[in-house]
Length: 219
Length: 225
Image (cartoon, rainbow over all chains, first blue to last red):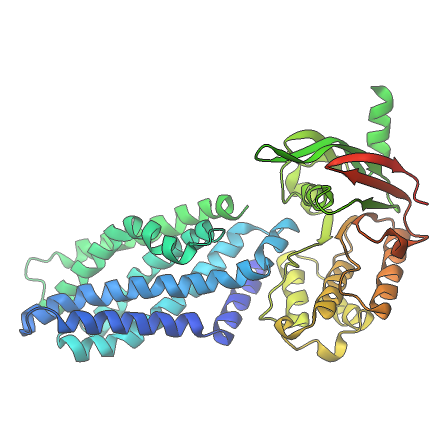
């Protein structure tokens, strides 16, 4: 627990000092939403439906910049590698980094929410929106942390990360978009809880499986 | 065979026919030597002779393709986790967080590795001459200061096997004297040291054994002159 806490504080401290990845993720997410808002019909229904997909696509693509930057600090001077060679647990590194990545992506999502509301009009309620955002970013941060480690040795890592990660998180993206749409336009058939349960299962699976695979990726 | 077992028991570091291949190129071929506790082995040889590969194999960063080696009786491959708890290394890349200060990096290593030596951090920073810059991020350090930081971490860790890959690089005259003093102290407390260097003369009086590598193969292993 002490190792996890120290690594969590380390990752949080570095995130606060290096804000480049955080700002890039926010900017890319906002640009993708702006482009989506300018394409297609401008009716409230059409805008609202596009808004949910654009928000999550923007957050996913923005997250690849954020996650790459997060692992850059491990890669540049081999800080993580050195501590693992001294006997540190790779699993503690994974959970500390994934948790900080989750917090970072959650904040990016919160900051993108008013932009989404301004561009697309309709949006989910605050409570429901935050719950879906939390589960969605949990489901993106764990595989994102694993895949940044997997591609970190490649010169093309910035290109490889979204290409490799996208197929794995397609079910997560479909689920969060459906959940957001139900929260935005109402849920007369009562499907919302099923989508939220599915999202919770995805989050749990990723945090368990990706944590178990991380040591193979970095060691 | 009985004699070999006796040597393996006596030596803290035991290396026999250790070899490592990258593609079809043998970077290290059949290296054999032993190092006892309190002794310093100098690895010498030209660029590309296999010194760094040997250091990386001993640190468990690379798995050997042939041969065997043990540290404190633990096989490098089968007992990798045990070996890691006995070894500390200074190599390139340096292995720290440039966005954190020297003090923060040492405190991180202390917590993550469960050293319980937080009280000793100030003393090691004083010892390597970094106390006045201890709160500056390492990204702002010169190469020589980063090398001093690496020496501070080795001093904090106090491991039984110290692996050094050109530790004299970037150090000024005072830094070199500091390195020589630390090597003498580590030897005195019983640590085994393996040091790859292009300048064995800088370790005059400290080296107990010289292993000269040529094209990945040891050409000479004997008492250091």
